[in-house]
Image (cartoon, rainbow, N blue to C red; front, side, top):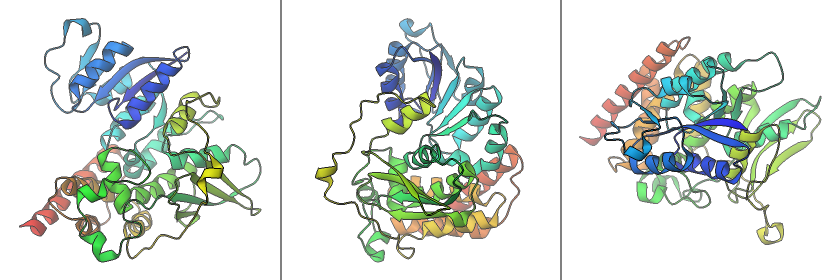
Length: 384
């Protein structure tokens, strides 16, 4: 029986994590739950799973129903405190944005294994997180939940002495895969939210449409697997069956395949090193007809180039990229800008903010604050 705390329990990853807890009640006990603004759903989850701690981070929780007073509700600004205080073996970090960084560090310092479904934590604070998660023995303290990074992790289990040469990160291409550059630049949020294969939250769906999600995943992979940026390549794979691949030194290639369903990587992280039944069927290969791959077009999807640019710049450049993208993606979802403005805002912020130190959490958070302020200023100029 492992005790698990879920940060972001009302989002897509959080709900599926709870589904797997319910599927395997003999294996998991939920001890803490947090949500951003979905108060009623959080209350429903607390009733069902009976954690001892909970938190609504986006607003005061208000009156606690009498039947939920067995649970202690933390104030909105105490997510990191809950991550440290909760009685849990595992901390599922499924909150959106840089909010996951402080909570991840607090949970890890308190001895919890981190199940990371939050890209921005490693993008903004990769060096800090990996420093906290370094271990002398073989037991990992940080397990990836992203389908692509989970696939890489799974393939590495079979590596033996064969050295990794290249990581091939697959991308669906999103809804604009076949659109021309001019059409992508004018795309609206409603068009971006129509993802062809995955069902995800709005922010990550927008990032998928712009391919900023893959830019973030390039940075994430660099930290998770200790590789150079040059060892990470992106392949567009519209069917979303091959979740990522590794090319080894001897020329062998290992891939992890599965239907596009996040329950497999979620449960793999929850049960590692064991594997148990997830309720997800294997792909029906005869019905697939074909699996195709193509190189991404850097002219139509320039976000990928920004990832390599930020990694080369070092310091807090990746935190700046992330902060600016969060601001631009939110503006896009609010229909204040079109898709092309997302890239221009992030690129302009990187150019204006420049190189900043990222040796401490305060320095990373200050870079994030400056990036957001700069991005907002650029957006204001663009929309007035």
